[in-house]
Length: 213
Figure 1: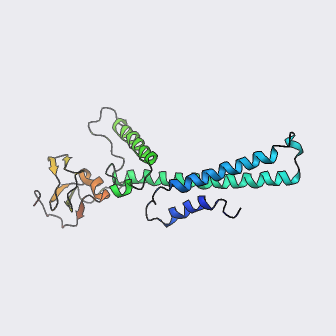
Figure 2: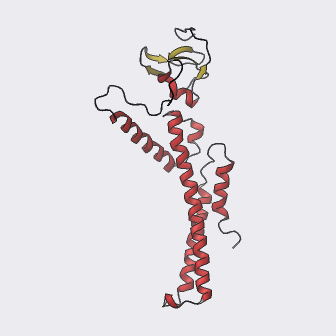
Figure 3: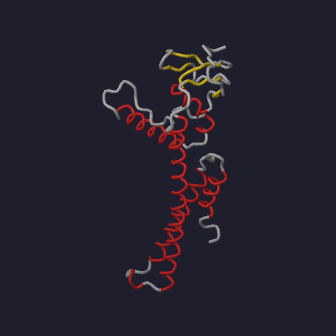
């Protein structure tokens, strides 16, 4: 009995130790689910020879309570693990937009990736239809506080096939290549800065960069 619930508690400990999310531990989850099934079978076995469940002996009742508590504990731990991971995914969407780093995607289960895609779709649909007949969608993921400068200077640290170029409000399509440093509207690149795709360069007011160099 000592090993009961140990698997599901291990999942929560992995969450606590991880800087972001640990690799989805499908193996331990399956073992914890098997524990739940095994305990449920033990409960069935205890009542197999008792036709009248209202006349159970104290020993059988104690056994049912014991196994029931083990099942509930395992369920709570599993649900806490899964729910905590989904909450992290939802926060990630608000922090980096659609540009989720590949190293983070690799830590997710396929069902979690599908959840993130569905969440993205629902959020995008809401932002596009929140204000009827609006030319530009409402960006709920933008900073709550207005930035000090409308324009920011950014630097592209490395080539990323997922970037290529971005569509800006004033300058059309702007290409992003390694070493490029340019001035753009903050609202056009906010999601890239949060995702770590480009670096926000601290500049003095009045510095103007016309394009990449």
